[in-house]
Image (cartoon, rainbow, N blue to C red; front, side):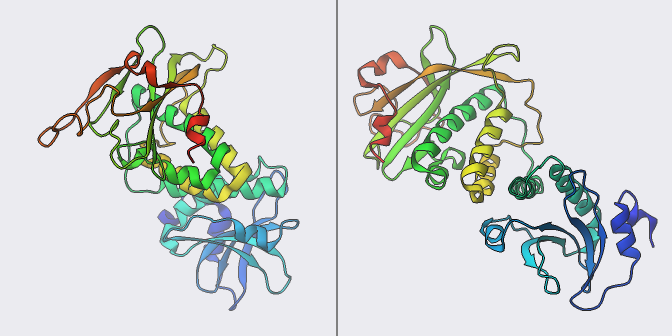
Length: 340
């Protein structure tokens, strides 16, 4: 066997490579050591596919099938009942053995996550999260680390997204989140638009408007401008958090309430140029309550196609003083939620 192929691969997989192919409908397997005693094996089947199986005793097949595990070309994930002993497992396999070494890294990551779990539901959720993270990691396009002002803007959207999830559910909230799709409004719920901004604290009450369409009412029954005050902070200050902390908080909320939408959330995050491979642990922020909410109408100050002929104008950017919107200020997000 070519030593370059097996270098760095787990001894289980090396052993399986050297083993003969098992009979049809059977597997050759090696037990995976687990600190918490979870029943896991590496295997090779009659087709020459390699993989791992994680066995469950208390969770039924319906619970496993309800999980919408991510799909990608080289890795297949499915719940499986073993015919000869009726044991239930999650079958995770690589269908091209030339990628066995990366698959080994992937499986080690799943095992390390399993070692943090104390119950089968926790184990299932952890495997689900790891698989989603790896699918995201294996996307071809790389993104740069978000700059400070971009982190702050995304945090503002995530704060509202979390509030919205608690009000109208995870599915509807994720479908309404449009900022990462480069549409003119950050959130669209039917004909109601919500533009979310993050500003600094202090005397300057102004926000950056990035296009002529952001405050345009075109095609909308209502348009709201929601402004969060988010300031740079330090680890020592109470209630300080990082962008990663906020992402983790929402991921945990989704896992606890409807984990099938974790993949969609991670995908939307990636489109927002957030990549978990970047280090945000030193960038601390603090959310200064309360938020400010305004109902936008044609009387509000701003540059829009209705007010200005924008036919030959490109990249309209300006700072808007919130003082000019004080007559349209609203007290509560209920004004938004009541429209939904």
